[in-house]
Image (cartoon, rainbow, N blue to C red):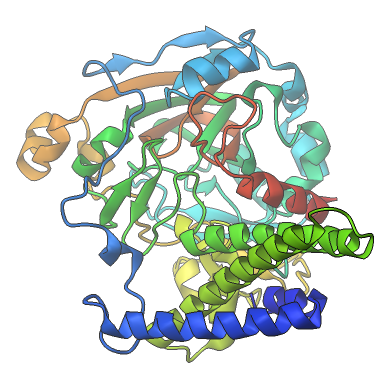
Length: 504
C-alpha cells in the first residue's frame, strides 16, 4: 500500500501534491479525533473489527438462492449440450447444484489420464493426506510429502490410507496465489483454464483428487468457499448436500457471522464481500482504480488548459478534486492497516506482511495457512510417518516464494458432526438436533459425469473404488442473472489477468 501512495505522489504536480497532502492530513487528523470520540472506540483511535460493526439485530443468513425442496431430494441430471448462457441462468445464478452427463469438448483430453500417462507427465513431489485408519475420514489435514510416482505405486497396490487432494500453491511477490500447484502445471496443456460451460466465471484454483477405497472413504461434512465444477474420471462419488440456507444447523467449527445472498459464508475474523474478496483489499482496489482514473483525467485537463480549450479550468479543478478524494481514501486505508497492526501486535512484521498480501486475494479468508518453503511445519505433517513414506527425493526449488497451504487442521468450514453418524437419525437427534431440521439432498457421480456445486453448499463426499477426479474452483458470482458480468466489480477479472502472467 505504501508503494501505491508513493508512486501516486511522485506523479502529481507540485501544486496539486501540496494541496492533496494538506487536505489529507487535516482529514486524517479529524478522522482520528472522531475515532477517539465515538462510542465504539477505546480512546486510542483503534478501528472496531468488521464483526463488531455488524448490528445486533442484523440477520446472519441472507442466502436467497435455491434451496432443497424436500428432504432426501435427488439432484437432477442434465445434458452437457446445454448452452453456457442457459447453464448460467438456470443453475449458476440461482445457486442450484446439478449433475452434467456427457463429455465436454474442451475437457476431452482428460480421458487420456491413465496412471502411466500421469507418471510420465508429472515430476516432483506432492503432499498426500494420510488417515489414521481405514474407517477414519479424510479432511483432517494430516499430510505427508512423497513423489507422485510413489503415490501412484501405492494406489496401484490397493492402498486406501492415502489421498491426493488440494496442494500447496506458490504466491507471487504481491501475495497472489498461482492458479494451480506446480505438479498440475505439468498437465496444463490437457485442459482449458476456463471451460466454455462456465461462461465468465473467474477461476480460483484447479486440482486433482485421487485415492482408492473399496468400502467408501468419507471427506467429512464441510463446505468450500468457491463454485465447484467437479469432473469424475474414475470410480464413483456419492454426495450428501445441504444448502447454505441451513448453515446455522451444520455445527461448524468456526463461528458463523454471515451468509451472503449468493451463499458465500463468513466466519468470525474472516469477513469478505459476497464474491469473496477481503473487505479492506476490495476498498484498496477501488481507491487505486479511482486514483488512476483521476490521474489520467488530470493529465488531460492540464493539456486542455495549455491549449486554451473552453471549460478546461473547470475540468482541471474537478480532476484535482477527484485525485484528492482518491488519495484521501488510500491514506485512510493505510491508516486502518496501521491501526490493525497496533491492535494485533506486530512482533513478526515480515510474516504479517506476507499474510496480508495473500489475504488481498482471498487467501487468508478461505482456511488457507501461510508457510515458507523450509518444510519444517510440524503441524502440517502426521507424526506417524515412516522414513519410506517421508520421501525427500525430487524436492522442488521454490526460490523462497511463499507457499499457500490449502490443507490446515481443524478448519472453520468443517462440521463437528462425525461422518459415521450422518445416517443415524436417532444419534443425530440426540447429539445434533438442529441438523434434523435441515433438508438433505443426494447425488451419485459416475465416471464421465460432472457436478456443479455452488459455493458454500455443505457436502460430505464418499469415494468408491480407484477414484480420480479433476475440479475447478471459481470465485462465487454476486451479480444477479448477468452472464456477461457475473461479478459486481472487476476485482477478480483484473486479478485473473495478473495470474495469467505468473502462469505463462
